[in-house]
Image: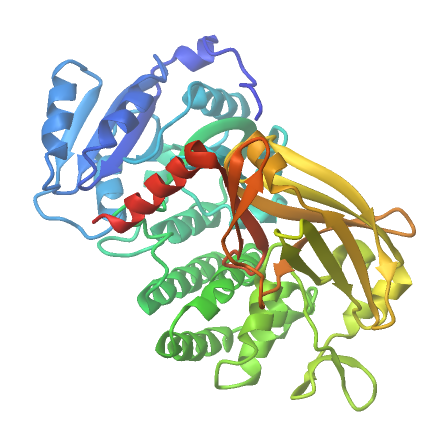
Length: 541
């Protein structure tokens, strides 16, 4: 990650100019850590306003005790739970006195130097909004994934948000600093009450007001992702259809906000972002839901997409999200779910069967010849949604890969070799790599085989390992892909393998939610212990 771009104690940074609004509900385990991370930003923070949304777990008492020894901390307790994040954030915004304001959730933290970096950028550029890099930190592993890193790769000053339309993809409100007077002058607030995904609407209102924007590459927010928590966050609790309805409602509202403000380009990008992000994410999980959910999801999504116009489809009509949307619109009932899940994966895979319309044009399927895929015939090889299957036999110590043809484009590109990487999911930089040549087969596919040594992976670390591939073609270009995990007799089953070094290695190949191959390994009794502890955590109430 990037170090701070400005000295932490520069004259601009030490000005007590920033208020941090911290919101929480029944989060006594984490709320004081969040508040302390805001207070620990130093003299740039004039005040921290902690808004407790009528908690019942003693959170307010913890905040009151912390405030007794910290004059910069003010605690506001709402008399009735609001049911969402918008009301407490608005309450905090109304209470702040500082010229700039940030927002922080009770289960997250601000990294050191975050406020200084954003304040220096905002004041130096005379910007009403300054944004920086947010990282998603998976707990308990600590693995970090940057959010929209391309936006924050280098410092930038934008006279208008439309100068960087990709801003519409970063719908987080928490990784940004706002001029308080700017928000108040334009009446920019969060939706009140129970309104999931309120960030999406708030951010659209910010961009609709056409602020001057400063961007910095510094880490300014750490978003904690706790998938094993008893109560999942809104962004993780996607199993119910109401979550999808809330998501589409927020996206529709954001589009209307920008369109009403005359920001047609940004409004168009909001719709593109829905196809690229929301639709792919939920379509990827669709095979995991029951039949009733699938029918409701399909019907609701078709109604939502019916509002899109011709211009929304012209930009890259075979991009994964647009192709998924076209399949959904083509039929009233859920169909082709395994294939849609593969297409929704990142990177996308378009699995066989492949079909052609009566005139020979590539199409989605023989049942849907009107969904043409002709642009795939001219798309560069490094952007093709190529499909690779993986057959893993740990007992035999072999991994076999099969690359499929794609309307003749694979043969035209000429695959030469595949770079394999087994990457540990929770330990950055821990990986095992190998390069294997492709061999053409008579079935119109290419195959590659390589030894698999689970004990070697166990030497490095127990836990989950993801398989990542990079295809190399005749012209030297490459394409990153993931491998679809094949199931069948002897595949994807738990095994205990003898090991000269560890005595025994436990191996469990499995398919991830997107269908990609992954592998869990544990060496001996010591390696088995953390797996058992994790399983107990999931089973205990």
